[in-house]
Image 1 (cartoon, rainbow over the protein chains, first blue to last red):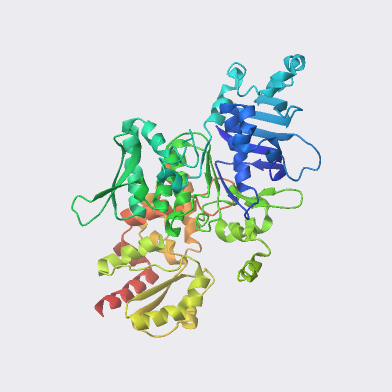
Image 2 (cartoon, rainbow over the protein chains, first blue to last red):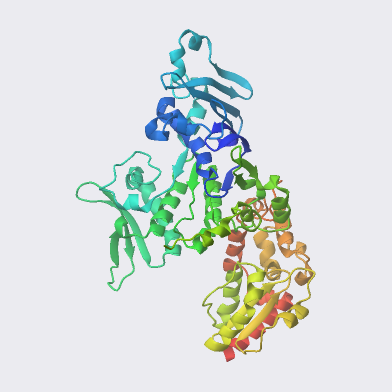
Length: 378
Length: 186
């Protein structure tokens, strides 16, 4: 199932945006324009389906409603996410509007589920009116209530966000592990949980790809130590004929991030959100990321959204203007437009320029040249 | 892709590719031509600079205007209308790879106005699903090629394309090959 459109109201940087989506989306824009916040709307839907409204909004997860509401909203207004999804036969719509009540609990103002235009859920309903406490939970999060639209709940739950932080993978003993941690604290367990046969097959594929990037790498494996802690091991070419086994603590940032990225591409079927996958990678490797994503999609038909600042990532001339999403901050919140909606970008790309050449110049902040004039001396 | 073609051309001559500069478009090359030439003269290693020209430009004129000097180990070459023309020049194999009849591939490949466009158009009518899916852009989007175009064509160059056949139908390829030979003999 793919998201074909998302509408956000009063969500973080966005006062109101309506964004048509395709199987791939490359989000570009200056720093702090809201690329991560846009991806977070999808993560929020995942948390909503998996953990419920209270937890998704909570201080620990997102810092409470105050942090979620658009900073541009002039009056006290509700937050709304309106998602349209499409699978091979059906179109679905899920709308959630919520606010904070007097006891500072998040509560549902509106929850609507539609399948092919037919309304399955429309809240508040009569039961909600009799017992307003029910509005502290969505139907989405309740197995007993989401029966008629379980496939949406499952699609939301299968959304995966990845932003691997190599330091977190390396410091296995120091970091408190979180389940499904996008920053990678449970990455090695994740690898270990996959059945052995599949795991080995995937590691083999990753090994091939990483070999292309790191020529001295020979082999790769996942092993548990005496204490039962899984580790990731690679064999490097060495003057010793057997090579040299190293574990994750010895791997470079780039190698760890590449392995994490490849693993994420192989694992799972739901929407994949990638935050700046280019970080720490060599520019020639980044050039191939769009192809790698497309190849993975041929196999799994998985939808993918990527935030990026990278010219190389967008240098593939096969990335169409329709897959580029330009975020432009303004006085009333950030705007989102596809490259195809901006005449200049569309014209350049029709003439054969890549998205990097046609669209990235639109993301350069106006006064950036001042950076070099800032006096950092004493 | 360019690099893959060059590997196939240089391989039989016993020339290895050391370093690849550029991938930043023509202006980068033109701006730095003098520096490249100077580096060739100083280091003594062979330098090949390859430029794609648009259809309305004249190759001899371009070479005349831009030649930075006469170092014997420096070669500025023009690939007339994109390297894709060289790929089309192995007519039998490209037809096979694209899954179209050989008669659809023009004999005078260097006169094709936009060879990449021709490859993409042929791919749309391919007998092979994979070619139809991967080479052209998805219907209705703003792009001149599919996202996997380079990957697929790279596979063609590596596995199927024959330099010897292509040289028979492409003058510019043949001329470059002859000049590269002189690199070796020195």
